Image (tube, one colour):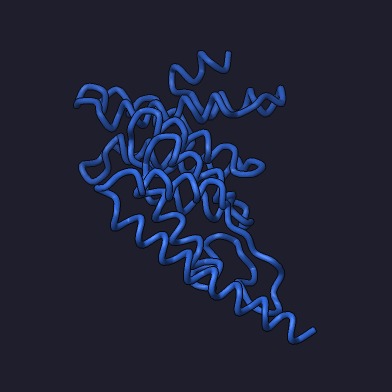
Length: 222
């Protein structure tokens, strides 16, 4: 039943069935994401057909106007579902991200921001980094590492749910070194990515120096 509802675009009904019988929502999010992908790369016919199933779901902004395309409304519907149906450890976000990347679709900025802020908890940056590496998105992976290191140092830490950045009095912070090492090795083997490799390497070197200084100050205060 859920599969049939998803196939016809009745996502509100599919979600209702899943919640009634306590089923996993992953298939609904995968189906919604695939609908968005088809719309983004489809023609005018697919756009026209989409308005009927978009209107069947509870998104008040769905209005067929020149200013808003069916593709835009589909992405907005997906975004609203991610907000309305939160999941443990960002499972639904990762499901959507994995579906997009498996079809070679770049991740929308709103999706990355939403993933970072889901539940206002600490984002599992390591999981997102592994997804990027699995699909050879080296630039995106490098950018994530740079942002995360900056967050640990206090620049934009709220976007990752980090309450207190690195300091002599804060609790311990960590980096997903295994994935970062894999990224650095891959970048180093690709000559065209040498500048990106150097940026990540320099950022990590600066971070390690600050960690060493912070550790010394913490020992002195004791």
